[in-house]
Length: 220
Image (cartoon, rainbow, N blue to C red; front, side, top):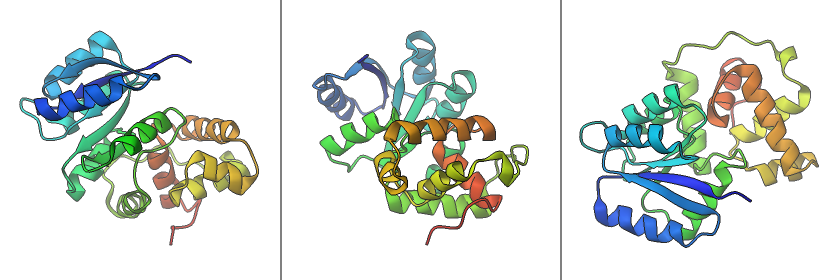
């Protein structure tokens, strides 16, 4: 298995160095580079083209939200996960709207962080169930993202709609697979087909769109 290359963007050297030490202990992960601010993150992303960027939000010169937007516009294949102390709703919503695949707080424990980062490459969103439901609810009410071209229910298969419903409830790929009696690989394939049909970047955006179009039900 090829190693996951990671770029770390954080202006706090002590925290960043700790992350380097943690991730360097993982056989599947290679720290490709570090950035001290959002502008440098953009420049390093162009130079290194990493698989994943761990992005702080509050940084000098250019914050992580703006850096995420610019990187995803230019290099949409690069996955970005916010790793921050900010619990501000605005930061959370802007990060996902700008294309971030996940949003984690720096209070997370080390092993959970590693497990969630690996899950990104299985098509999973590293966001807690509570946060995921909050995002979906708020996006359904106030997202400012221009709507993709409307898609009819018939354009998604019954199975794809079932997958989206479970995604909206915060289920991981293994949980979805168990519920639907299919393999995790099949779940991943369904998600890729859904994203291709909806012309969206990640599963949170897809579930949000499906909610707003009435394709799935609001999670309880």
